[in-house]
View: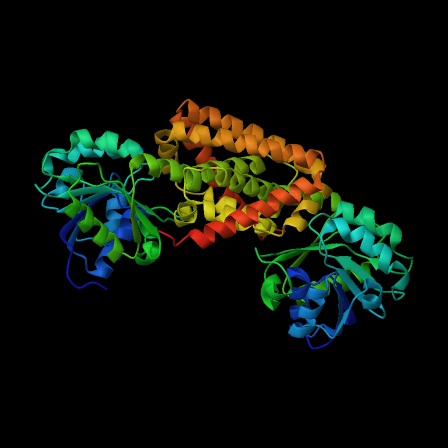
Length: 296
Length: 296
């Protein structure tokens, strides 16, 4: 793809599914000259070194960010503040610091106090993932045709924002920019509540003793399989997302529960006209969303 | 695939996604010599004739079943009783009558009284589908590597059951046999409740005015997209399923709502240990189900 590097040195803090996919994709696109990485666990550091997907693996986050002009924090959102505290004093002046978290308000709040003046902080969220975790799960194409949402603070340098946007576009994403607050609402609807619901329905099925474990997946083509895939996302990552965006999540769960309660009433009354209307509306809503997907 | 026909003449009552896929697949597998079909609407009959996927298109169900040794009723489950009443007197002695409904208790109850002695009634449910409907949506490979569940009544002729099983295996499915009652419980968990939940979450998102329609799908890779796909299934078909299996559905919705309520409490309390435990259990449950999928 691109031949000219956008950044000289990229540092990845954390090398799970997203971190390793960024390493693969940034190399494949030729958008950085070198990649440094750090990881909490010795096992992950050894595996990343074996995979050869970065140029340098460090034990400390401070060592990884030394000399980097782009630092991307790829850890569960609950750890972003602590990571910022560790790296703040070691950042290269003029460096861009970003992340990949699924909640942006908390990341902005937790990281900003630790980042020195002269460093550009541009939080980001590539909306992409799989049900797999860890450095072996990463692949260069993860971001292709997905969206990356940037939530720069109001005083952000437009050039730094555009440079990070160019980096993400080179990795294959479309880029959108919005406030952290709006991001957290949109993602509550499109991702966080669906995940909680998937976890809940999987937990409900798991309680059931009259259905054998072989039956659950055999017959899950009718819908359940998608839920189990969603529900096998990284537990620690989702724990942090739920806590970081919990006010919004509670509101949305309540709206959803109310909606489900109405639907239960209609099913209980065997009200076929109301049911068909509800189902037809859902189908029409999807069609509107699909039609609107590439509107600006 | 198979060269020797298993049935001479197949009649399909209804030619939507499932009926047309059976026509494609039965022809491709060479398991029937001729296919007759009927459809309620003139538009569907014209389209089926244009597509050339069957040998004869009739306006009445009675005409379609004349001389057929396998009749498969492919209409929403709420119409199965009425169809049985129409075709009962016109069935060839010794013919096998089956269906494709997602609820089996109601189909057994509604159809049996209308079927004459000397006809083999073996209800079936191929667990396969897409979000598309109508005769154009069908394709021969829909059933490959899926499961077809047969729910023969206790007094069913084992040879007739095995012959229908052979037909479905020739179309690419694995075949399992169980009671209608157990089927309806298993499918409530693996399909019906997931569909209701998907309809509900799509309805909830559709109510939200602060998120634009373009945003909903753009950022739905994080989970929501799967729900919208499930929720765009055929409204009339799902209306009938919900009503036919409603007692079981209400029980399961209640169990699920209770589970979601506990999860809401844990999120509200920001209890990170409990959340991570719940999420890790869901992931482990999926792994057990995947491991158990091909156990007998």
